[in-house]
Image (cartoon, rainbow, N blue to C red; front, top):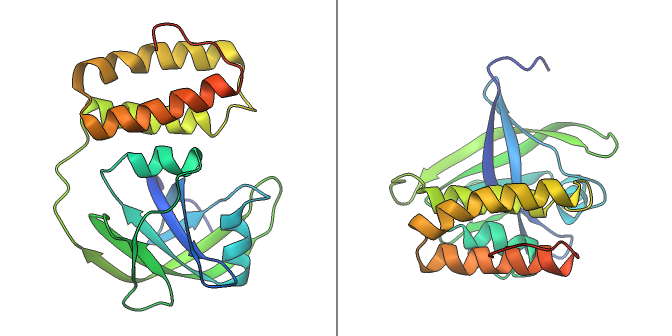
Length: 194
């Protein structure tokens, strides 16, 4: 599929395990010609779940604790049943999109699943991210790549992102930030003034 007019969205993808348990993970997905391209790393629960159950939900949320929590072992977020697919969406989602996988290319280290929109629903208005929320999402992306990035890069990025946290973070953002900073420190990366 040609990638015309593609956009990347930082979202939470909810899939179902073989036993029907919801699994939510942060992911950058690409919108291509009216379809969504989901590219989980292998091995991962999202990859295994999509190979088994060819449906998933894209969740749009402004609660950045879900992004940070998914990377730090806090995955027990409440879900609700979908309308048109056999699946679940996050209870705190501002909106969600239900997808049916229509194609996949099994590559390494990532597989590309192409999803067709089956249903979309808005639950609450999105009022935009403040700088702290954006900083948490960027820190979550960094945290998901600790094994791929040099420590100096992580330290530089966190030092810059800390400015937004100090200026605009609320309780939810501070909690999410603390989870991510602990994970980074536990990986042996020293952070100053964090």
